Image (cartoon, rainbow, N blue to C red; front, side):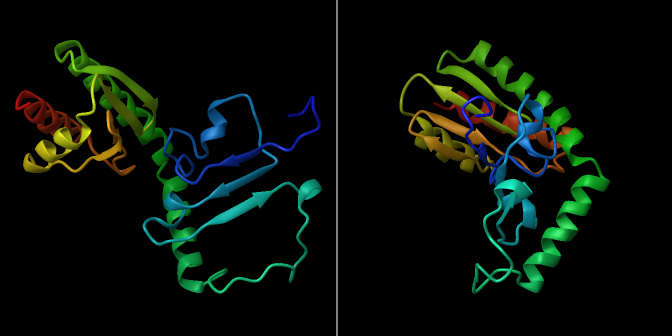
Length: 184
């Protein structure tokens, strides 16, 4: 972008606020955005979104943009409290540590289950890919085992635990996933 005179605009809606092991996902790479959008983790469960921009590319002046929900006191307070908690408790580091633990456990499952063709991701945003469209069946079996996961594709499931997940909870989740996979 720099060499072409283009703005780098990053969507950190899902990857921001510690999820990838740094406060913002881009910090794990040798880039710096001109514009960035945030949501999800910003409010700690309360719906809020934000966009941030460097001064040189901010086209909006105060009063240019109105919003029915913009600047809502409740959501803004939640975003402040959530951000403060993530930073003061270094939940980014926790996401790195617990993400590594989960990744290692999923990698180990891949060695024992031929149906798992890929394990990928960073921090606490991971996925496993299967050799066929079995995500729905795996999710159903996981639900029966007491584990809630998200089928992001017909052949892939996502792992996105809270930033406060404990080692014991990671181990329990993997154990329940393994039990579900054994039932296929």
